[in-house]
Image (cartoon, rainbow, N blue to C red; front, top):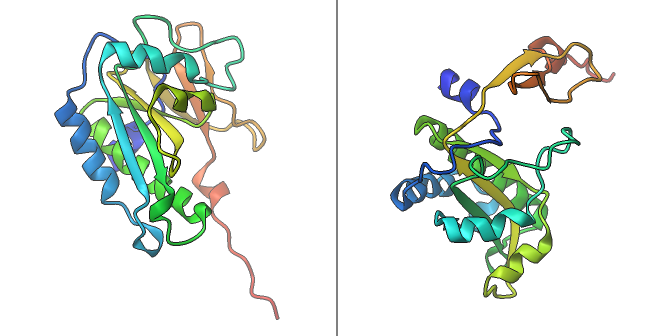
Length: 196
């Protein structure tokens, strides 16, 4: 488990021509649906896409890597070979929408851990043009909240300790290796005294 968690990074460059089967995508959605859900409402539904034609239509609506301001996203040949559109079904909400967003974090982490176990990398994309929904015959009770890009990774991602408490920006070196600073375990632990 520790090894899979450590390997499950955000990947943004893929071997585009390596397909991901619909069977594999359905297995990943099965992992997503098994995650915990506030009030057990289970409001999330998923649309899986793995055809080059539809993937190419989705790609222009996506934003990539906000810290890499000079990079506009993966070039042709390095783009995702599949996507999962995460759709909130408002008819299934049992509480506030904010609770459902917690569920989505759990669900997509399950999905990405399962993907890494299959040697598939992924990237959660919340920065997308809302006009993405216009590609589909979307009923009013569904809203796209997140897009998960998937593919066979074509980049190396290295975790390193933050050099300072304020510098958490990821970056790429001259060889294209992606570096991701993580706060130390010590800096994440707190011991708060009890108020008298």
